[in-house]
Amino acid sequence: MPAALSRWPLSIFVWLVLVFLVVPVTTFLPMAFRSASFLEFPPTSFSLKWFEAYLNSPSGPARRSARR
Image 1 (cartoon, rainbow, N blue to C red):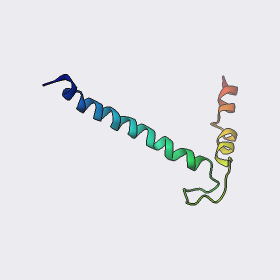
Image 2: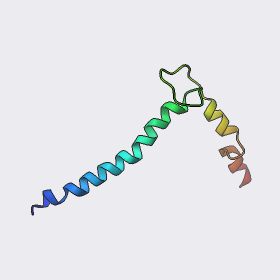
Image 3: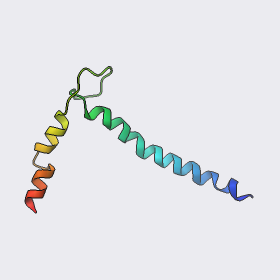
C-alpha cells in the first residue's frame, strides 16, 4: 500500500478533531457579545454584560490574583 493512502485515515481523524475543537469556540463568540441569555437570530443588541459579570464575579481574574 502506498504511503499516501495509509495517511488518509490519520488526516481524516485530525480534521475531525480540529472541527470538534473549533466549532464550540466559533459558536461561543457570537453568544458572548449578545445581551440575551440565549442565542437568538437576528441579534437584537450588542453587549459586554457577560464579560462584566465574569470580571466582577468572585471567581473572576481580579479575585484570583488578589488571593495569591
